Length: 545
Image (cartoon, rainbow, N blue to C red; front, side, top):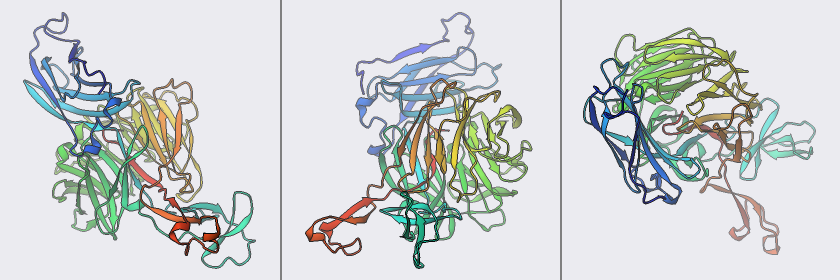
């Protein structure tokens, strides 16, 4: 870590010596311990010369209750000798704590936080400190289809959707007549293979987009559906394994798995499409098959549940893991789940009737949920502590679904609702201010089949993954949310990284030794290999939105 001579510095806006901060307040020692991952590849200080500052910040509920400590190189403990204890009159008696590792340009290389920490005397808090990593699940090749007028055809190591034609002559049952980029009409082999993509997750460095680790899903024939981050501790994956619905919990410390099957309240197997974890990974919530179920996250036993209309559209957890918001496709569209009292009769209830369930984002402090409409672009704001909701004063300029919240500029960033999965259409990104009174611009980019969006902790950047219409054009885009929103925000698009292991013969070397060979019979020295690029399906970032 750079600045090796940096010493611990306490910047407190409220202490026993500050006039006007409540001299009669009680104070106590607060110790914050940064817990590092067990796996060396996940170490936040990997490539440690990039890190220039590690700062631990503490915020209390009353005016002026703030302090920060800059840690010396290699240090993992921050101690505040005298932090003010919340008074009896405070609206809450808890603290919010965060830790950040930054480079010289202010990029967030690692992050950790603890919300709603009880503080009424000397306290020690452990925070999971995690490198900025995005976890991405993948779909099957041609999983989104090519629409009624397209065909999924072979193209090198992957496939692409091409428009169909009908004037190629007899192509046979294994080939399709398609229009190529040069407008020639040709018979091309229909893609009939498979890849390892759906059975593997990627752990990606959010800044250089390199693959840190290729993670095998547990099971015999697993297929990931959706990913959700539980703070900095775990990634929750819903999976289908040989026809059985499962939930996998991936530790962000060592990338080990725990898996289990969930049953509905009647004892029948549930095939969850979405799942998330509550505080301390004690309980979880899953949805699918017309049910919302609260389950024990250690045994996967069902604790309570209820029938819901429609299917699950999105799910997120806030309030330090005590509340979950589930968005469904039919009225009332939104359900609030109390994970702190999972067996209560009203643990799952609807806070309001809302038109069109799109997606949900949680504010960084975990206290507000923003639910988007995929019919009119409106936004419902849910107070997770009080369980009440209100409509926003404005709306997005189009129906939207996936959404994230940026605390950096108090804005929302959402992906325009797409048509049927097989359609080849663009998705737009929109942004608005926190009160939804006005929108900024007409979007920040167009993406073929945007399949997931996730915010990096701190709210300065977001990542969007797009499956596109070809394995060659699948993309990973960084959206810069720190720019002046009155101008279009910067979007740095790059091709999705090629898999480091799976490859396919895509051609034959020129020359007399290889003459007469083709991709199926060429000797090893004549083969041209191309590494497979997968198509992303879902994305989650620890501590992210």
